[in-house]
Length: 357
Image 1 (tube, rainbow, N blue to C red):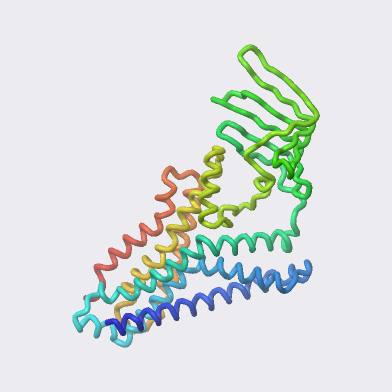
Image 2: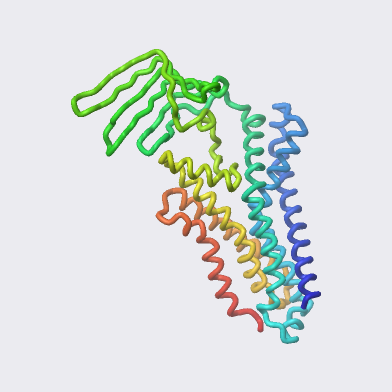
């Protein structure tokens, strides 16, 4: 079986990479056609377009992994079944589980590559895609969105009416400390500026109101330096910031947000769950794909490939729904994220009862 193992692994990986390249190229051509007028209108350099397409291609590769793995394994297995190779292998005394070994080994290789991509390479590609869109497609903004709310501690909330990136300056700043639903203190200013030399915030025309048991204290001033657990970068985070962090950076960001008591920490935790969950998809879908296409059919492999597309799209749809469900406040987000793998894993075990012996 060692020679056959090497042959199956080689054919599987070769078919997988061929399908990946073809699907990614098709999507990239469609994306370029759609954005070509915008590239011309905004005079986007050709080098930047090629860099964007490379980064976007990496993102597509990760997104399409369930489809490409399923197509590859069904194509290889159905071709072997059509030439009665699987019947010959099983008739020689080799068990179906033993025949599965090279397929699962190849899937493990793909899963390992997917984990490396998800953890370290894809975040850089995602950041590059985001930067390209802001710079050339959306024509970068001079300021962030208005009415910014950000949690800077377990009981502290900050607000800015507008933050300008060019001068690291915000307007109409307030910092409220709230405990047990009661306002304890409120610090406000007309303007807030980031001091790059001291790494502190400077409040211009500030006002501090502190509520105590015997009444309240009120003080004002022209300038006040203060340290907050935020920097200018925190006011300019893209919507998909959690997707642009490498795995170690993601873990550090989760720790920082937990120390602040930030509400959006769940998005970063879910992203980490997804990165550990995704590589197992190749393993599970390979298992199902071999089972589905191990029987010889008169109609050829067309039906199996069509079923492969369908099941892969169902998996992606389940993944999107489960992630959305987790982000909207699921009590057990890790269970929600893993739900597609759990469902397809159980489906594979049920289908295993039908395989030829």
